[in-house]
Length: 478
Ligand code: PLP
Image 1 (tube, rainbow, N blue to C red):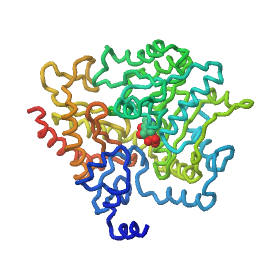
Image 2 (cartoon, protein in one colour; image 1 turned 60 degrees about the horizontal axis):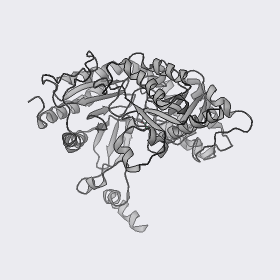
Image 3 (cartoon, helix red, strand yellow; image 1 turned 120 degrees about the horizontal axis):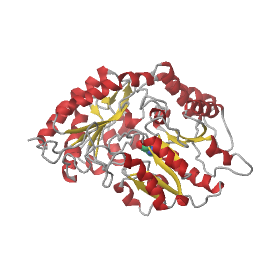
Image 4 (cartoon, rainbow, N blue to C red; image 1 turned 180 degrees about the vertical axis):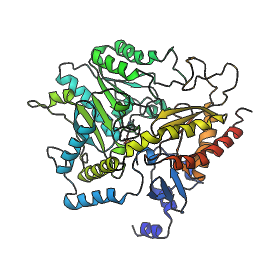
């Protein structure tokens, strides 16, 4: 449309965004009297907006850009591939980049996870894992195994199947009824153990209890992230994954490790399962698989799970046109080259302690209740009162005192704190991170994996004064 071209050339991207662009998970009404943040360029750990303001990307553009922004070599790999073979599908056909990448991923994945089914993103990977689990059990003579056990407050994507696994009530409610079969157990929030959980070891046992309760013959799979994102980087207690693995094996339930965030170096390893020393039956991944230089996801299956699909007339009756797109495959190969050649995983291992120490140093600010996470994936939980008698929290290193917690903010206070102040203020001062209240209010930080002490100091230089001001505004510790 001529008017659009004119408007763009006249620099009214703001107007066009407000009139035409439907941003995801976004209160569009909030932009009636605010500018839409329009990011136009990136380099390393930083991005720039249309007005020339520079920001530290403390979220790797939604946990994605693991190798950092602005890599011309990775972009070039995509361009070169487009010239050679722009597209061919994985439906019955193969092409060299998909084959090479599948073999390379199989070489990096734990155990016998050797078979790679590409998707276009994370929700598609989770959707595929759920469908594969159901069909696997049908092929192996257990057709009633259809349910999926997931954890409360966990995010596994938005398509209706994946949403049945997602355990965040406000994300589910508008779309009820959901695909049947999603059931939930407590997550590993060690700061505030879920009601009924008297100790950390109860958390894994809750999975066995849920399978027994539902009926083992009806449960297809358990899906969990190595470190749960929503709620604020819940790490597993010692031995949790080993016990969950045992339970899944005992009940013939497939274990899906949802590593859409926790793979490709985010936790300092290729896959999060490696960090916690377990071998799942299926891994779902996306985001860092290309460092988001092109859209891609994947489902990685063990030989055991793939086997029934390799015989006779069997096939996994499922696919997506663009999955395994040659450009995305070429970009992913270039991304993995960068990770290997430039020691990206080693960088995370070498500096995650300093990252954590910087965040821990903020504990002197009264609103900071907990600091938790692993690798370059951390959260700060914000609390209303940590000094009140009877409001003692256990903290990530404290002794278990289930039922006692630091006083929490009400929903209204959380709204005032996060949307009324923190999100806008952090951005205004040049830090992109996530202020989230899908559980209790948290700030999440997940910087590009090339960051080091200098970048952590830059994060702190914004975070500290803003948290101090938030403490004052909310009357915390007053
Ligand atoms: N699973 C997990 C653990 C995620 O964090 C996400 C997205 O953040 C998804 C699934 C869905 O991925 P996508 O947004 O690429 O569909």
